[in-house]
Length: 221
Image (cartoon, rainbow, N blue to C red; front, side):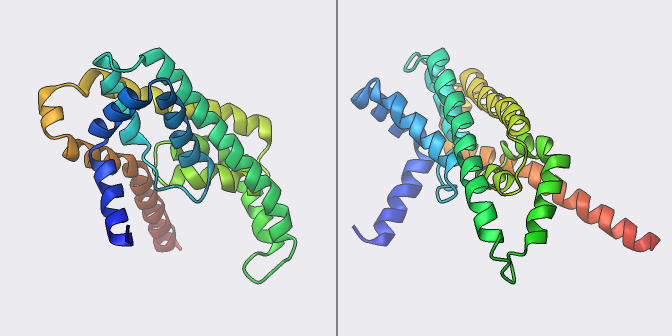
């Protein structure tokens, strides 16, 4: 299979999540839970897999739970566990690699950058970990950077649990209550892209707010 066909197949799977998830659940039974655990774990736990589906996948699982194809309580507990453990794994990787990389004091990896990152996460890390949960790609790197910045583990774990549980509950219950509405089912592709778009809004608002604040400061200066 060449790269073009592989890319087409990946896009097809992401767009038609409802169809493929049903097939996975039917064909793999209890192993489907393990597959779903690994997808969410890797999407948030490994910096090399930010492309895996997150929000849309959870939404579809909520719809399947409403249809009786999968157990809501079981899949909710599994996904929450995967999200929490994924963040912990990513944090530990960053915490292990950070000092080793920045100790070299290379041109773009100066020790002072590490200290600044540490200061930022000690001051703003809590809300950063929670908000990042709802932003694709960003949520993959936030715990990694928190580890690099040596954010205190107890504080990280507390906000990690809050963010992970909130994230899963929001999209799982959203799919449970709205995923099987006829208009949603008929336009599921648009719904998936809509979920992805909405997931990026917090980052967009934060960027615009910071840009506006910076402009106001420059004007006053």
